[in-house]
Amino acid sequence: MDDAALRIAIVAPAWYPLPPRGYGGTELVVHLLHTELRRLGHDVTVFGAEGSAEGVTMLADAAWSHDLGGQAEAARQATYLARVYAAMSGQRFDVIHDHTGFEGLLLALQSKLAPIVVHTIHGELTESMRTFYKEVADHARLCAISLSQAASAPDIKLAGIVHNAVELPAAPPSVTHERYIIEVARIIPDKGQHLAIQVAQRSGRKLILAGKVERSEEGMRYFEEQVEPYLSPTVEYYPNVAGAQKARLISRAAAGIFPLQWAEPFGLAMVECMVAGTPVLALRTGSTPELIEEGVTGFLAEDADDLVEGANRLDQIDRVRCGTVARERFSPRHMAERYVAVYRRGSVEVEVFPSRDGPEAAALSSRRAVPTP
Image (cartoon, rainbow, N blue to C red; front, side):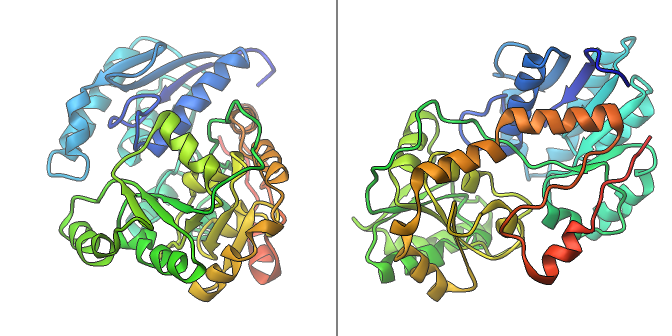
């Protein structure tokens, strides 16, 4: 495929508008991608949820966001996808880029509306999902969002590994900050807020927890037993933050803290901290070793003791350099250009970053994207 402008259809998830007004990490990534692709001169048609910004065909009702994770989720998803492909009927695209999940990928392949179907894997690769992706890998260009995610499914043929982007702050990284640390994440055991509280107490720092409580029995119990009893002037909780308030809290923090209890495929909130010049303290799990450059954009830790040590070393981080390095690596332009390489060439080379060392690095860097149809 030559360098001519591409006609691209992007199918966003059905649950939150583009851009989201709070929670909605995948929707933020899709918003940044379609905006940047248009800046690069491509003809982009985007489908998403009600309440989206100009330039999005809105086919999912806003009220459906309440059904995410509930009994009605599958039916809402099917309704949205039916509307999307009805709207595309009779049109032709060079590329369909699906961000919705296996149902959307299957419909994109069966629609025959584009010779190239690209699908970004945004979530955890469970056994059932790995089995599905292996079945369709010869017909779609599959993209992982991190080396860690790709390593969890070495038998799936990938077209590329493309890190997510975040919105870059207009202001330069600030060298001034307050002493508090912040965790921006849903309140669930996997995010480890109980450890963040321990680290803040042991390092003598105030902690701000910003994120909604997961409305499951487990999530509510975790908040009531592991978080709420510790709320005080030194442990503050913000149910949901967005926009200018979120940017202000992040940029003024001494650090973001992410004591994750699972192998998260990609940490958008970590990157949002780093591009603001706010270093990150995180346990070495999932994608954290490839997102954080040790001593430059934060510190990696093996346990709570290491996190406390990192909190006591934050003055070693050059916040301007932290922000500059992160903005180069996680800009919307960089993400869009890598996806264009997948659209045109069928593959994009794996990026290996400085925090990767030892046997894990060798295993991950050997994972190379292969050309796909």
